[in-house]
Length: 288
Image (tube, rainbow, N blue to C red; front, side):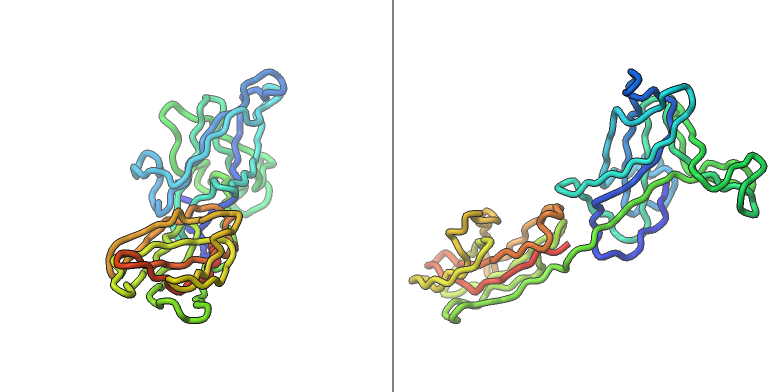
């Protein structure tokens, strides 16, 4: 179902979400299997039933089993908070989006928010705006809003939190100034984005490579000054990517991992083909 719209945030990275469900499946503490379900997220979805009606593939999907159930015959409702930082984060841009809950038994369904009486407050049944209803999944699935009457409505409980993080910035530096000055960062290092560099040939070079380390260094060689610490114990970070051309364009995907945010790496270009020429470098703070 559509989730409305996500407002502007510091990043598009989702690192935490919360979902709710109701169930009569027995809890594992009393010998039952517990509830089983999957939750999916769809960026840009604007219609009902993102999973089946729009034919969209989810931007992210998380499946759970052995979740809390009931310890007796009465339905039990639960809300789970899920932290996915550390490599499971995903992108959900500002704007419309959709989400779905898929149940895998006939005794578990979305936990619903009942609207209460038309004028607000408690209705004739003593029910107010709280999580107090659930709808077990049907064989054909359930879709959209659940209409409980002309004035009453329900909606799935889903809470999605985007992460705050630093901007991606790169600062140029060039040691004593003896190096070639053909290296330029076109797009900085942003989580989930593409780090793009352009290296204009110097001294007849036909290609270029990049080297990145966690610390800088200034060391004069016959090819120019090395401006990154090639002896750093963390090793080279990018895999020494290379490209031919003048300019040589290097585009590197950046993984979505909030553990990398705020780290600063030092990146230097070197031209090859027709000799080796070292270029100036950049100190790049990884942004989110």
